[in-house]
Length: 305
Image (cartoon, rainbow, N blue to C red; front, side, top):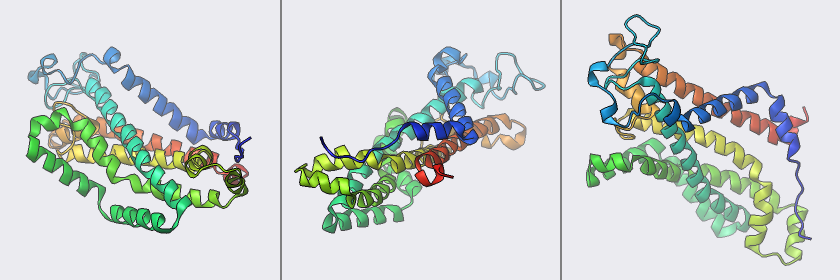
């Protein structure tokens, strides 16, 4: 039988369920996820379809305010889109970018971190220096340059068609060092343990040892860093869209919606910016709150308290 370090899976879950902050964060995320998945069914309008809204309906306040319209629960934006529909679809885009950007970060960073932590020597030096160089560069600056070059080469129309995958790739490639450094540090700790020595004595190959034995035992810190990085990716997408380099106006994300109403906020149309902003804050706080709960649950020293 192959040696491996045993771990408990039920205890961390029970710890999360006993954490009030973790329960609230998880509940909010579940509600948001269900809302964006069911957006085509519960949204009264498709904000991506230019024929479904009228510019004459622009700037209508939420239905509970004076001048509101019962057709628009949260009012309309500067283009006449139903804001409730735009927020639902925009949150879906923000979550999609955040989730898949983290997948790319992990796909690049985890293998490199495993290699650096287990092999050491020259491999460790190369990966560590590459990560240091990458971290010395601003993620937003790299994304701005890449998106500006893409727009200049292929035009704004192409940017609109490929905005989501382009944002996913740019944010994912820019942030892989966080996974690499976490995986490297955890691998160095695991590589010194007896079960790894026993696996080597049994003749288990390097790749099999890293992927079948070390990787499952360093999953806990990687899960925590994934939650943190997802919040960062969502924020990066919102910042780029706010600057006009992310999602186009015809495909609103939370950042695009905040930007579209920024100039009108002091003219009285505060809801166009404030409502998507509150949704973005709630999303980020929930993701970070769940990450904190997972960190406490997966850390044996904290569970013992």
